[in-house]
Image (cartoon, rainbow, N blue to C red):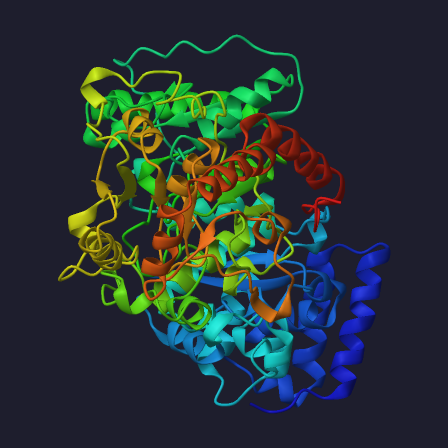
Length: 636
């Protein structure tokens, strides 16, 4: 294409200034077209564009294109151009289609090009917006150009404008690059990023994504009421105060924490969507809202109604569970390696000003397999999920980490190491949500408070019971090997027996929590896990019961960071698969040491994991988050 003379550009700027003063846009453009055709040979030769080209040129050199540029989104057989302000973050621009893709789409007659409304955060006058005519002219210029036309590409936002320097982009773990996904995954990630940067764009993007799809796939937008399903009763309105909805259950922790927050004057509710007759239900201690309905239509209606109530009522929403960061199961992507479903409900909540929080649920949550194995070398080789990429892989966990980092204002890692996607300003490292009830797990259980007959374990005089458990044992064990080190525990106890020590293993799997506390209460020693480097529910419950707990505790953090205080003070007796025999032998031979460790453990659990203590801590973090936009770095 012939270069545009400087005098033409200057003349267009004069026409722009004239338009700003008194002349209409249509008259200014008509004058521009007439003069260009009559006097400038370079424009006269551009017969395919004619007056349309003048319209494009007018905008490219004018104020409009400096304030509003065109951002293309490709979905199915259409390209939609969103009008946005120019200063977008580099990691968002990197998700936009590149020049090569746009050239191909512009030349494909089967692809329709559309112009969407302006989604800039700044109010724009009508004259600042683009017209459908100019949009089509841009497509024509792209399709016919044999080489780059800088005036055209200056108008469009393309990913080429972000990939020139890697330093300008966010550095993700293991070189994860969200912009290198396939076009559909990249589009959905772009929509998530745009929905956060430009909340007013949500409906425009919803219409792009939902075109031709059943509206139930994109709640909460677009759904018509189901007439034959009665509306669920709403809870009575409450005065505005600190509020949080714990959307997905995090074991029993959210249920206890919500109750303690209510005692502090909060509007706090724990929610679940769980069939109360399922085996899964045995892991919980109840829910304030269980929205499960066996009938699919009624389930859909209940969720939609409750979402509208919750969006008006709560100003923080706390999630847990890989792939389940949504109010609606339709938006779950726990089986997707790309975790690219668009949580329209979460974006809508953030548009309304709500804060989003997330608590991790395991060693692979927000951390890559490679990153975790570097910190805890002995565990991943023993994991049954190491070679199952649909559960745990670098790509899958990076994709999930990217999504949570985009959406969450608060990420609770509950003393786990701040590796990979857990290392961010939104992360709070100390205990915050894994709440334990000190009354439910009282040291007197099994001592002054008798064990129910059906759960009582026969015990000979002088016998020492050593408890160990594995949830989903068959699923998580391969050829007798699992991440908890069960084989080493069994071997150590067998060796102690052979040496004449009066020990016996209490091995349990898949026992409901409300019953399992009695198993723990009857144990003299509790063995949690021997590989992870941190500890889970069994250890927290055991410490709250005042029993000595054995497990692998790695007090070394990443990047030379000091261990959080709860880990630095942790009274769990450190042991690995290689040292478990020596550790157990010492504890079996010294009842006084067992009693001392048990008392220290109870005090530690009350200080760090008690429901009321965590409620007070949660309130402090909540207030700091609302005041400063991020959680506090420490508890100080």
